[in-house]
Image (cartoon, rainbow, N blue to C red; front, side, top):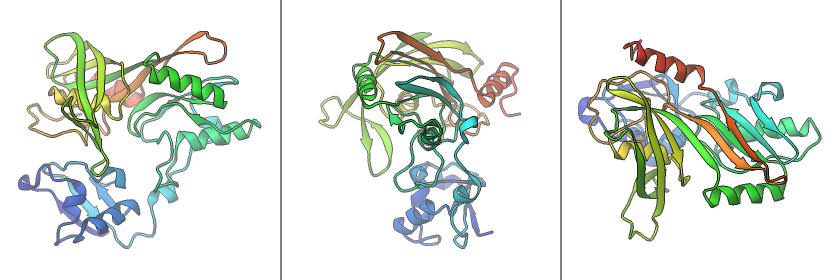
Amino acid sequence: MGDTWVVQTGQAGTRLDKFLADPGRLGSRGRAAEALEKGKVFLNDREVLLADAARRLVPGDAVRIWMDRPGSSRKQSQRPPRPGELPIVYEDEALVVVNKPAGLLTVPLPRRTEAPSVEDALGEHLRSKGRRRPLVVHRIDRDTSGLVMFAVRPDAQARLKDQFRRHEAERTYLAVVYGVPEARRGTWRDHLVWDQDALIQKATHPADPRASEARCDYAVLESFGDTCLLEVSLVTGRRNQIRLQARLRGHTLVGEQRYVFGPQTTRPVEFGRQALHAWRLGIVHPLTGRPLRFEAPLPDDMAGLIERLRSGRPSS
């Protein structure tokens, strides 16, 4: 149902909202934003949100607009995980650690409060036990899987956030990227600025007054010809940091949809999200001072991707 357009070669790299705003489609950025916000837009038969407005299109992408659709499928078909379904890794009187599935928000979006989130599900879980609401400590992207932490007490939240701010928390990710870094291990250093209009992170000059330092350490764990598995440890924790820093060095994450500027020199690997997993999380307990370290095994989709790459079947 609705109108569908297939992206042509000459339209490659166009932002989704700009593509929708073309006079032959919706005619304005405002109408495009409204359609995205109300769940009227599908990219390759998958609903996209306002947060996806800056996604760059590639030839062959099918963009469908269903303007008569009554509301969003996220209202109709998605629900927060029930308390027994929430993958809680650790819980005590001060904090909770959750192994977040890909596709689930960490916290609700301001303009899409009906979309399921860990915070909402965790709030229901805590209320069922007569406890306080969850308090955000840090976040990971919707389509990134893995460990995310919430506090249960305000004093614990403040102490945990201070560990993250001082770069004392251990945050290690697993990522599958195109290409193999020449140095098998090293450090990526950049200066980044968040573009509030495009909703993306951008590289900038160190002298830019808006700049924030971004630093992470990486190591190549395994290579698969023209792709590889990286271990990436954050020193700083900027939004979308790993996704952009990898791309700046020509190592786009497999499945990446947002940070894909410039030519792609290797054959695309089929994967439904960015291949990024928050694998390890280490902190000092905010009340006892005891070191805690958690690990989340690779989810089935990333484990399957790695097995395909090992066997030389990237697109099967």
